[in-house]
Length: 393
Figure 1 (cartoon, rainbow, N blue to C red):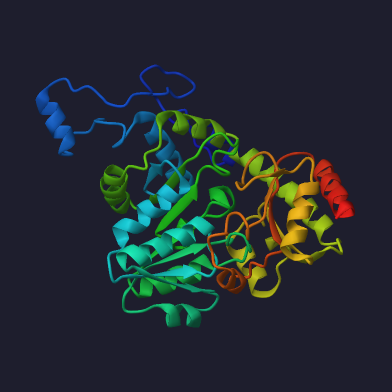
Figure 2 (figure 1 turned 135 degrees about the vertical axis):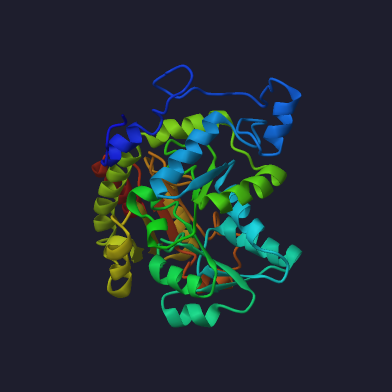
């Protein structure tokens, strides 16, 4: 009989404790491209979906399946599909949903490559998209058209960290028979559970907090078993952004410490944000823990923590932002996030450089903004590094 567990650390420690043919404590790495059938009839039955079993790692693999089940379990979803990157997951979900002439409603402000994908879909496949703040029911209703097939949101939004009320958007989407997709990369299921709030699909760049150690590129999508099967048998199988078994094994290893890491990330971020709030060179600070009004209300309803991402604007514009980053010694300049190491980047010239300048400004992303992913180092050391960079600036 399986023990009843409710605590996050216990759940995470047991994620990879499923029975396997070897009874190993750590799940086996099934590093194979294909699987052998005992006879031709079995092979045909498995290909037709009439008999369970593995066929080819592009279609499924025991180690990859453990990762898919782990993310789905943590998010409270029926099933999951793993991808070779976060963008693989996003495109893997959008492509089965949309066809020429359809429309996608998006939160105002998305990751630069997501913006690039939407532009590609518009240019090559006549799939339109509209960006909206999605802060009120009226804004949502106004932005939905007769061709809208789904709503896609990031919350917190990258890199402004603005929040979107998942439950409100989900209710509006479902009134119109639309699917709601939420990118939960910044929060992870440890801090935010979009499925419980009404989302239909949750996507992750598992490269970030889920993996947590900067050594793997991966993505994941979770949702209903029916839709995940559609995703697996369409974009995963036929386009092929497949996660390797070894990368899935690394992710399973990293996820065991998710709760411990997220607590330290958030604890450090609170101290770093307090330091930044008192710096005269900081023209604006973007950190959910300091939001007020409606944004504060959203945080309290749907997030258990403000998270560990901070963006701040330097009054000297792009030149000041780049100079500041160049003065840092401990905090590394890199475009990823969610790593155990603190990482900083300049969206206007890096992650969001594909976004036209006028669109960046409309998203609330000025040239002087830098984005800081607070790691798990000692907060005193991070603050000392930031302090000396401000002095040199």
